[in-house]
Amino acid sequence: MNKKGKIKTKKISELTIRRLSIYYRTLNVLEKLYRDTLSSKELSEIEGINSAQIRKDLSLFGSFGVRGIGYDIQSLKKALSDILGLNRKWNVVLIGAWQFSEVLVNSEALKENNFIITKIFNETSDKININDSIMVYDIDQLEKRIDPKKDHIAIIALPPQKVQNIIYRLEKIGIEGVLYFASRAVKTQGNMVVINQDISINLGMLTYKIMEKKQAN
Image 1 (cartoon, rainbow, N blue to C red):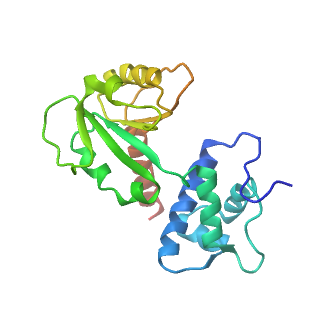
Image 2: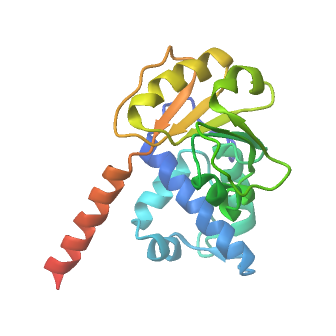
Image 3: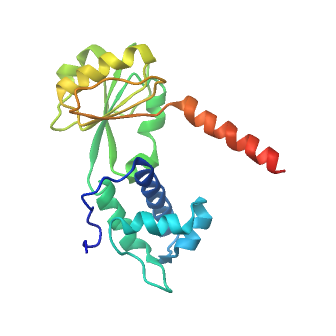
């Protein structure tokens, strides 16, 4: 039997990790509301995820709940924080984000989850209203300004045709992970974790749910 919070060696699906992130977000909100416990049924009603699926997801990492009481919010949040790697600070660089940088820099969600924006790289000299603690550089200075020992993650918001070249450059620098916004796949040497957030897919999910709701009515 594995110890509480310890990840089994079997591969965990991306959907499961996504749901764990959702559970963590909810626990974070409830903790601020001074809630102590939460049942899988309550979590199911909040997030619209089957309670059996919730229990199955959590059981992959240990035993957390108490029958008749539910989950201790603080303990479960701590365990999920360890599992998801949110128990440490992650320095993040933004590349080509323009005004989007202001949104991310001021995001309370990023700060609460230990994601710290440290540097911004832009293609243009457009003025960005960023606090003085964050330096803004030209995108040509990636290799000079990024330190892989201090900068862990990159977020790329560039036109699709420019993303691949930046991915190659970041991988050579030694960045651990990249999140990019583009409707195309990229190639890597396998030394870096890369996730694509394609807004067209999310919009497709949104429109499907809108139509589904209309048909139900």
